[in-house]
Image (cartoon, rainbow, N blue to C red; front, top):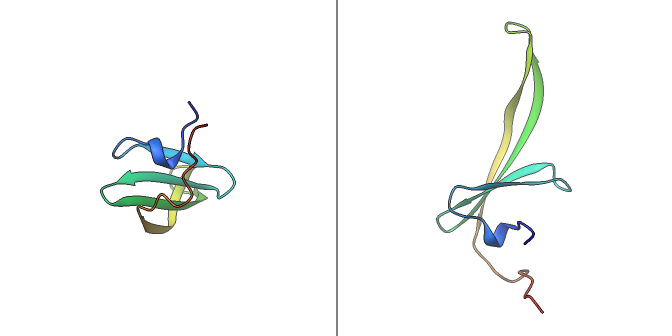
Length: 67
């Protein structure tokens, strides 16, 4: 079965390529987490830095119903 936001377990993440974000299931809805990859000169490596986190309350309006 394809992983969607509607079948995530609590605190499980899924990457949404079209939105370039990670979505985490939390009580009452989802967290959409947007990141930017930056270079850390101190460590000489790249890391993800959180740009924005948005809480989206649960709503099944767009949930696809299996046929």
